[in-house]
Image (cartoon, rainbow, N blue to C red):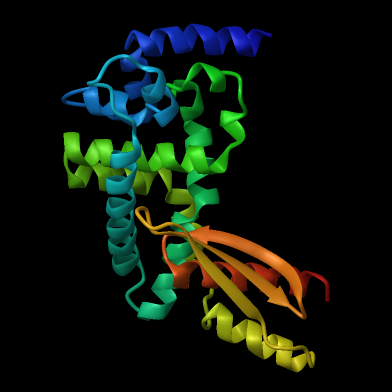
Length: 245
């Protein structure tokens, strides 16, 4: 009950654009114009119920933020991993920008509490919805980039994703997980893995890959590219299969 009351009070403050200083302090970012911050914290369901034609959802900022995130993470990996190949860095980047990772960062910041949503979603499980959480994080990056600058966005990404970046950079990536999975299955006299990948959203380049082994669904992953979704599936399938040994 206390959590519901807290959410209602905070939601009222968000509607009135209050407590933005508190949110900026939590993020460690001072915006030049908080309009973009407010937009980043605005779900499409809120816009649908709003009578204000000047109210926009965070979808465009999310689109921008995704692109900025890809560029910055690529640049960070390029700087930190001078001996890694293009293929290795693609795999590393996939692990860093995956939905689950971004959702965890958004959760750590408590961003779900700040999201303006439609009345029907006030009490929904926003804080547990990985897609919504990762979208908020990407929209936030877009708002930082467009309101401040690239360097501030890079600093924020490096700080908020530092744990995952360090983990990935220090990991030993020997080969493409898809090749490694196929070799592993061959050593066990199993059939080749089957990847079934489809586009979930052409505008946002969201792809879903289902990986089957011997006609059994092993794992599914979403990503912003077909190749990355398949790589993530192969990597997770390897982990699952090796854990059973």
